[in-house]
Length: 257
Image 1: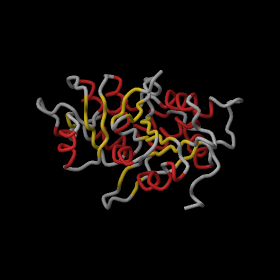
Image 2 (image 1 turned 120 degrees about the horizontal axis):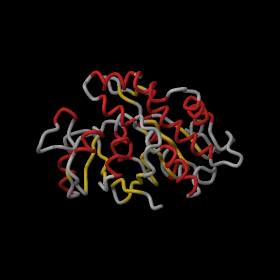
Image 3 (image 1 turned 30 degrees about the horizontal axis):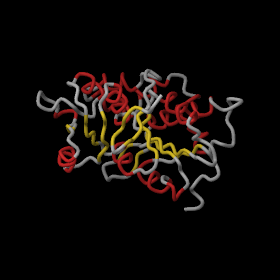
């Protein structure tokens, strides 16, 4: 694993649950982990936390309901299972419309699973809050070789469970990394960005219309054609939020200003 740790860079990047497991935590040197799942876990988390909801991440399986009972929280259901009795789901649109609940377990197969397993400081980022996340972490002293940050684009999964790197999460990760770079003096790429991180930053900055790219991506078209275009509209609200969700006592809550 010594070849893949991206030492000695301050801002690092690796994909999916396997990447998070390999490179996150004190043993690997990462001081903070940024999870990016634009469609839709981290977008939904940003919406919920803005509403004052503590979001508990959990893997996508049947134990979520039992876990919700153990932490005295409601549990989100699948998009198509939303009804009057279960108004909370992974859909950011549903979370905007649902009644307020102080505590919510929000399962997902990618971003939520990664967040639940990560160690150290864990932050949820998306296109809606990418600049706020990068600037907040930089302001806290993260993103240096002595306090490195690992940015994890969650990606999607093929039917066999293997990782499918996704355009929207790559762009979201690039947006966070670009925010780190903007805080440097001078605000230019530096050796503090690993080549992997610099590549995603360049991809984000080189995309002329990020919203259009996400809408036309495989994941975006899947949601739009499934009747969830509003979820994609919310996901591409670039820098619409200044809230930074930080995993605290098992749930994402707003970072202190």
